[in-house]
Length: 228
Image 1 (spheres, rainbow, N blue to C red):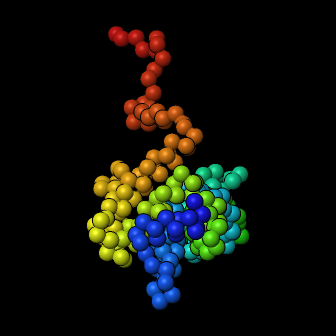
Image 2 (tube, rainbow, N blue to C red; image 1 turned 135 degrees about the horizontal axis):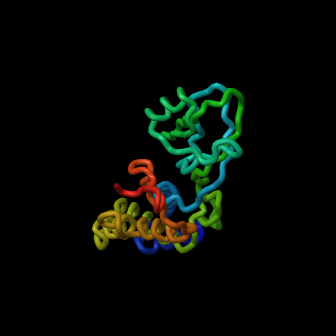
Image 3 (cartoon, one colour; image 1 turned 180 degrees about the vertical axis):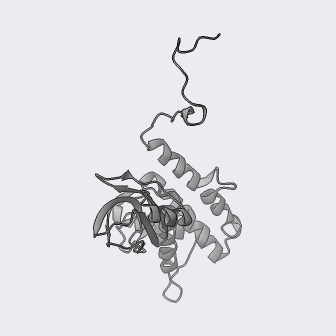
């Protein structure tokens, strides 16, 4: 659905007004953009590769607020993918030059701290541009990259907020659509369905086997020990 189609569906369902003195379409447009941002922030349906330019001898980098979430950080040809750490652990890691990173929006810590300007690679989620024109589509990358099969979630979010605004009796002031969107306990609703669908689309990998040799030691080969 494009921007206009979502607006029309919500306005028709709630019976909102479009007269000159009270044009509620403007409010619906704001709710739709809020819904797109909420889906992108909570479900991260579209991950992009980002080149991060780090200043030399800088332990903490102030990132742009256009980055909503930073999922992985890679230091190509040197350390590979860096392990995620807490703010406290990364400070200690930097003092010992142990590879890793920490991210607390909008601050980024990278270890080891590069002595010169360095470019590394990151995988994250960007803040979408607001939908403005009628034909703008949330499926387009710049508007969130939300696949068409997930657009109903945007509709339900907007109906929830619109229902609260209009005091919509039949939906319990929008509560019915809130439950459809968020679910009761996080295991149902649009958000949970989107997360499950996205998880299934990830390339499957074999489960890692636990390496007990660090704790128990490696078993000796047959014949290495003969009891007396």
